[in-house]
Amino acid sequence: MTALPNPDRAVITRYLATLRLRSKISHIYYRQVLNGFREVAERHPVIDRSTLEAWLREWGARWHPSTLLHRTRIVDRFLDHLVEVNLIARNPIADLRSEYGVEHSKPIWRALIAPMPDHALAALRRPKPFGSVLGEIMRDHIALMRNRGYRYTTQRAWFLRFDRFLQANPELATKPLAVMLEHWAEAKSTRNHAAECERLKQALAKALRHRDPSLPVRRPNTRPLKEVARHYRKPHIYSPADVQRMLDIARSYPSPRAPLRPMAIYTMLLLAYCAGLRRSEIARLDLGDVDLENGTITIRETKFFKTRILPLPDSVMVELRAYIEDRGRAGGPQYPQSGLFWHDQSNNRYSPAAVSWMLVDILRRAGFKPPSGKTGPRIHDLRHSMVVNRMLQWYRSGINPQDRLPFLATYLGHRDINSTLVYITVTQDLMQEASERFRMIGAACLNITQEARA
Image (cartoon, rainbow, N blue to C red):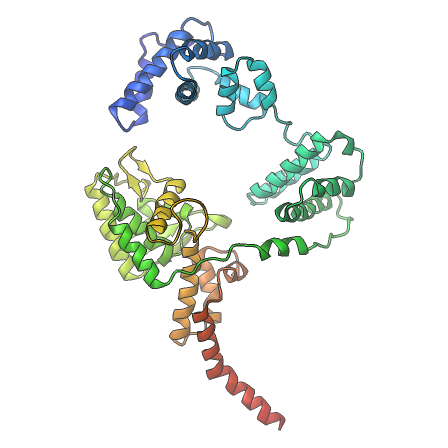
């Protein structure tokens, strides 16, 4: 660890220039915090935990604890910047996170503010990842599956939870695996935990078979998974009239400080419904992903590692072209890698969380969701609605949907047709169209069969 460089404060000035803060007031706050931290750091030979505690004591006497905790984020990001530009070797907060197994910085700062920091930090300590008796097996299996091209993030979370349970119950270390899993299943009585335990058993069986291929293949128990699926929330299918109402609300969305926002939300809704895009796919769209000449958009490296090029209807391309023109007039960057849905508040793209918040606000304004809470229809239900309404259009046009399902699966970015079948919610209109198609085609076949038997 080295001392803070450049007594002339040039480092702070250059750092603030890279942040593109929203207002001059934010710039003043940041400079005040960083200059105060610098004054304390200059009195210490190195930037370490004692430097941070000295700054917290000195400025804790001037600021309210909540304000001080908020200001710690400014210092933490500044220390990360100093590490990036090789002006200091390590960020002491990052070292403490690693030492105590904490993922985020805020609990570390809160512990350092406490009257007894050592005790507060000790209370944060988490078990070492994969430190149990089965830790090596689970860690090696995760590495193997990731080398094969799987993300394996969800399975890693299952393994980590089971690993922490084993470390918290060391008496199970000498027990058979079946006994360990039995105790883990009894740790919680929820349906989701039972389903996770079943998936964990399958993943562990696969890991053990990789080490010893002579082990028998484990037969899965589908009952816990079916029990969870039975209680899934059913998707809400928006009618074309519902979608039109949301689009009208988006166009008139009140946003005096960001005039481009109504058009951005309107275009997001169009792509969520007409192209069936996930919210993360909307947020990650670049300006260069839109091909106005050929009428397509490119969705890159999303779920299942898939990249796909989607043709869009002419009516959608007209709206997309209008949005891009408005974006250019608003001062949006024109290089291909810039975010398609850009905002001028921090000269950056909207995050997936921001996209979700804005679209959910449209649902609330349209009366589909209550003013607060998570109940009611979801944004992802637009994707379900796109599939159901497309099926209805195929039925009404005389097209056999069965022949088009592989194309629909590719359009949605699914691995196979089974993932697409989940999106086919049986509505009254869809049931009526299917029954009418059977009456016209299937019933005649049954009559022929009965006549042949006679």
